[in-house]
Length: 132
Ligand SMILES: *[C@@H]1O[C@H](CO)[C@@H](O)[C@H](O)[C@H]1NC(C)=O
Image 1 (cartoon, helix red, strand yellow):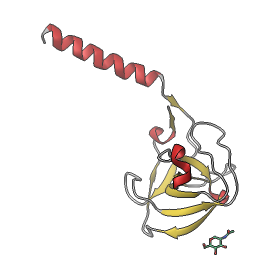
Image 2 (cartoon, rainbow, N blue to C red; image 1 turned 180 degrees about the vertical axis):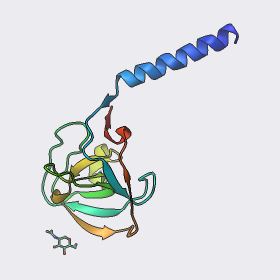
Image 3 (spheres, protein in one colour; image 1 turned 135 degrees about the vertical axis):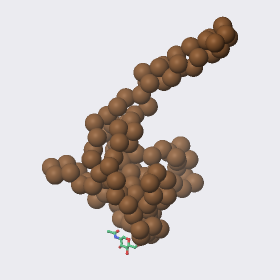
Image 4 (tube, rainbow, N blue to C red; image 1 turned 135 degrees about the horizontal axis):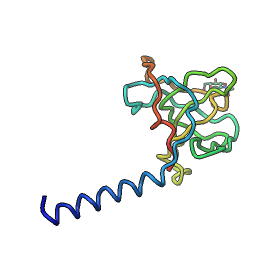
């Protein structure tokens, strides 16, 4: 490899290391999840927030009563813990929060529209619980 190639490789690996250092792996909330597809990229349903919810750490998102939420995954309940779904808030009034996906307690929302009746169950990964 020439000198320039080496420098580029070094720069790229340093960049990746740097990025990894700023990413925090949080404890998993569950071992299994339900999604509409293998990548959890399709919206399972639309839900409406029934009450406010304040995220307790970066794995979660805030909800305000009345907000609409796209649901992307549903964690399989773990005994002795809450039941959490993941999703993101949408709507013209919430531009700042749009696109941010996080978990929230399922009993804070009411599913109003189901898009994907067929879902698949699979294991969660550490990536599901990363914080930036
Ligand atoms: C949930 O949504 C359905 C359909 O929109 C509605 O009929 C029902 O009253 C809602 N439930 C609550 C608790 O708001």
